[in-house]
Image (cartoon, one colour):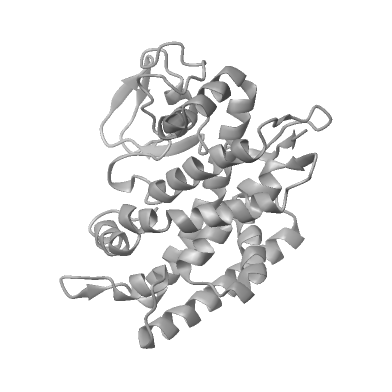
Length: 317
């Protein structure tokens, strides 16, 4: 879907949206909460831990695996493939990482091909079954379209949701007055997540093709040229936001472009929002004295497109 135009994009997105939508995510919120609690249980009694490696990264992977109907016995294998597939965005990967990426791509493709064939004969309540069943005007998704869609939901959705949670935890720890406010008013969490998406979005930039000649800042941009545009800068535009560099979970206008816009508005926005709304306050509820660990530097990702952390160490006592 990412690289298609209409009518192909509209056809596939329309079918996928029947299975993967806000209603499906809302029905899954209790299971998201259960996964988050289980991960935090494993951290109980720890004085220090890495929020990214031990909470923000495994949470969306486990959640999407459950939504796709992956058997619990396959979780370890599935997690390995998912982690290796993230190397697709590493522009400086080693030959070993490239080989691992190729093996993971093949492993996931084979896994989903088998899952699709199995669901064609015996439907379940999982997302793969819903994708197999999706129909519009007599049209259905092909096996390849379902496999590619599952890979897209797994890789793109997991990475960006991890970054959303990690960036949110860092922002709240960096602005303790906002954390105090959120603890006193937990009903602000939905608004707080939108402010996180504006202030420190998981995707920092994207590209746009010029459809009509225009001028930007005195520079002529010609028809057909490709522009790299900054979503991070758009969220900090002083012409749109008052005091744009200030993190404020009660900011009246939290509008942002973190999920893109138009026909290609991010299909994964509902689960990303739900997971962040659940995971972030639960972390601070479980560890009320949480603070940044001064013994470990905050490590940011090196990829230019993705804006997230590779490590965020905290102390709980």
